[in-house]
Length: 475
Image (cartoon, one colour):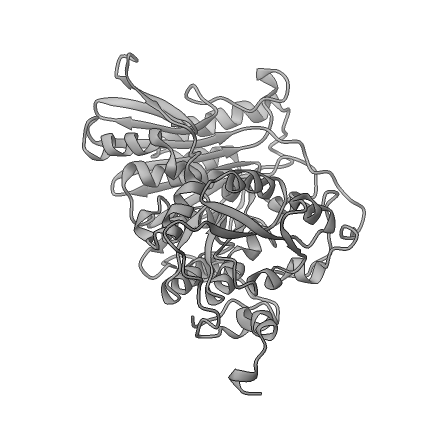
C-alpha cells in the first residue's frame, strides 16, 4: 500500500510506533478573531479541572474529549464530540490543539502523535516518564513546528516571575543554598491479594500503551498508578516537579545539575512502590539544593497534617547573602537576616497558564509561552534524576547516612527533620531502613550518566516500549 493510500485512521494508529517523518494533516489556519478549538485527552481529576479552566476562556472552546473509561468520558458533557480512543480525536481536522492529561507513561507518545497530526499540545506534568522520551518529544515539537506548553502552571504566577527577576538581578546578593519542598500527607493505597480487573468498559491494552501490560495490583485503578513505577513517577513527579520548576525559574537555570543523590523509603505497607519520604541532594554552579518531598502524615501536628520544615509545608526556601525568601504556590515573602519582612510577592498560583497557551496558539508564537515544552522537559528530568538515584539505592544505617550527607548542611537539617517525623510515626528503622542511592554524575548536554554506576543509571534514562506503542528512535 502506497503512502497516498494510507487511511487517516491507519496513520494515527501506527504513527507512534513507526515514527512517521512527516505531518499528514496540516494545521487549521486561525483567523485573527477565531477561537482555538481544543481536544481534551483524559478526564480524571486534573482533566476535569482543565475542562473547566480551558472551557471558560473566551478565545477557546473544547470541542472534543477522549477517555478510555466510559464513566469518565461521560463527564465531558453533551456539547463535545466524545471518543474513547484519542487517536480518533487526532483525526478531527477542526481540532487545533490538545490538552494531554493521561497517566505519565502516555504523555510523550501522545504528544508526538499530536504533533505529527498537526496539533499543538498542552502537556501535563511531568511531561515525560523518562529523560530520553522527553527529549524525543521536544525534537518532535521542533520538527513539526508546533506550540507546546508544559503544565507546570506556576511559571505563569506573577509572584514567581517577580521573585525570579529580583534574585537574578542580585537584589538579595548571591544565592547560597535552596531547600525545595512539598510536605503533605496521603493515606496508604491499601493492598490487594491478587490482580484486579480494570474498570468496566476500559481497554486495558490501550491504557497500558507504551508501558508494560502488567497485572493491576492496586485497589483504586485511577490515580494510584502514580505510586507504581511502570506508569508513574511518584510524588517527585507529581508534586515535586512544580517547585523544582519554580526553583529553575527563580535561579535562571537553562539546564539541570550534573550530580544527584537520593535517599528515603516508602514507610507504608501497601501496594505502592515510590517513596513517601524522599530527599534529593544536588549542587548546581556552587548552589547546594535539597529537594524534600514527603507525603507521610505527622502525628505531632495533629490530624492527618503533613510536616512543617523551615516554617512552611511547601515551596522554596532560598538563602541569599543579604536575605532569605519563602515562596510557594500563590505568593511569598523576602526577609532580612533579622527576620524582618522586606518584600511581599503576590501571585495567583498560575491562573493564567491556560490562557497563555491559547494566546500563543492564536498568535502562532512559541516565544509567548511561559513554560515551553523544553523547559518542562528539563524540570521533569530533575525528577527523573532523583528517582533514578533512589531506585539504585541500598539499605543504610542512620549512622552511615549521616556520614553521607555530613558536608551538606541543609541536608543534615532536613534528615533530622525526617527522622523526627518517622519517630512520631513509630517507624522501626531496623526493620525498614533508609534506602540511600549513589551520588551519580550526569552530563546535561548528552543527557546521560557518566562515571561510577553510569551503566546501571543509564538503564533508567529510557524504558523499553511495547510493540505498537513505540516512541520513535528517529523523529
